[in-house]
Length: 260
Length: 88
Ligand SMILES: [Zn+2]
Image 1 (cartoon, rainbow over the protein chains, first blue to last red):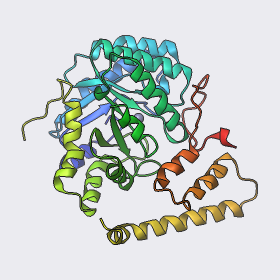
Image 2: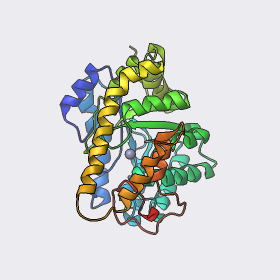
Image 3: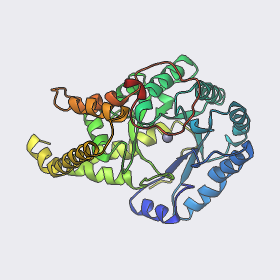
Image 4: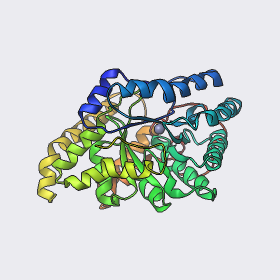
């Protein structure tokens, strides 16, 4: 939410959002040093939760150096070294969004180091998969890499931004699948519902792209509305938009929601 | 939903998108020059729509995808371009 205006918080609360989970991601430009990441992690674990709290919205975050900045191994090592200092912050859910962007060798080395960090600190893992033509290859590489680390339980991993050609391979690996909704160019609300109808509603959830690009923090509630139009029952909608994410995130002791 | 209900909910939207797609192809073909690897992948993907496959969205995505399994040596760009250059 560091890229969003305060009005977005108002709209999310008005639409019924119960919590916001913000992964560490690319700032739209490359940071020049690990100190830039230190400040960013402070923003994610100190300032942003306070901003969200003003609107009654619990704020959680994930920490990492994202794959778009993983080509520089020295920078990645420096950032990986400061992450443990932040892991005991009360709003931290785990390591993410790690993964691949262009499927390069250095990106894979940095992904391996993040998976090792998560294993050593018993953290949940949130994974970004590459976009467009790179997604299929990247998803295969990521799933194989994580499966090969026997310390990681697949049910504690969510592979995000799945589409029709990757969702089954993620679910077959026993991992959770995240469908990220975009107003243009990637997965739409209608396609996300199609995937649920085709591949089932277990270990799957939706999230909003909510970044520096064209994105919509209300994409999930709007998709719930689309499900109603298709005749999905209220319990099925609640499972997909609330119960499933709460079940996965509930594996982290930090994830607590106020009693409704 | 029944097929009739599905058509009632989505037909107008799909019709609009189909015409937009046709206009895009007309626009490309009116312009001087040759197709590049993206347009070639696009035409391959289009053919998936007239096959009887029940997973057309998946097949279209696969038509645009890099099918290789080896990591690339170095990432020289951040953004993907939508089609795999190696397919041409
Ligand atoms: Zn991502």
